[in-house]
Image (tube, rainbow, N blue to C red; front, side, top):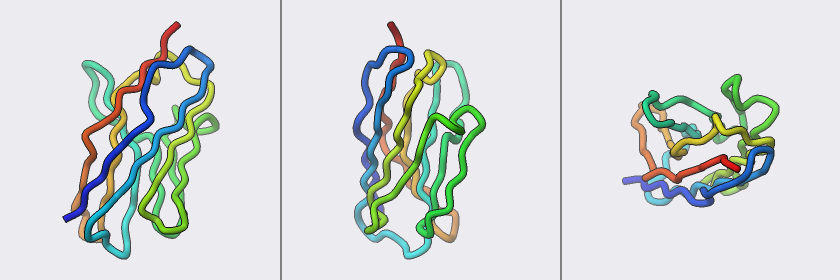
Length: 116
């Protein structure tokens, strides 16, 4: 079983920065993709950024140029550095780990609120 836990959410002013962290534990498969997703009130959950255990990254258009996803060398800790935050970035952010069989594991989510 794999467990993922997010941390680092909070309230930030527009234009500010915030870094989210996610730690995976348990029987982590050798091949996996970790990612950040978010869900705003009344909207569907959407992909923000993903990173493979080989370091390949993918970003949503809304995150490109403002957000940076990274993983520690041990591969079980992931970060999302967010800069130039906008009110429309307000959402619950979820950590996801997907293995080679497309089995997914989700964290409980962390709230990010961008407001003055």
